[in-house]
Length: 57
Image 1 (cartoon, rainbow, N blue to C red):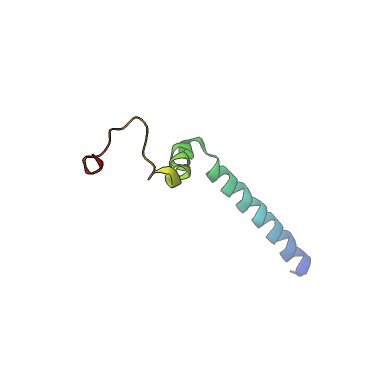
Image 2: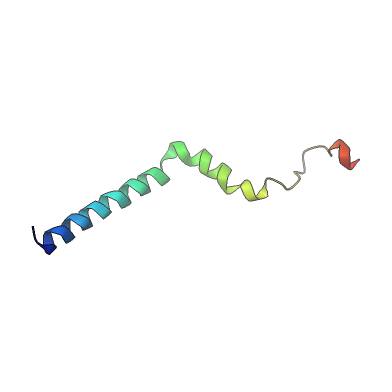
């Protein structure tokens, strides 16, 4: 096995790993989880449809 075989193996391995990560990231069953995670920065903002907490009255 020379260096060119190792490079070819590494290229194929990285391509398979990249495909796996893309499949994992864009799988439809994970969409809700990622949308929830994307909205985490806004979780502490008061919503317009909720009542005012008793401590702020």
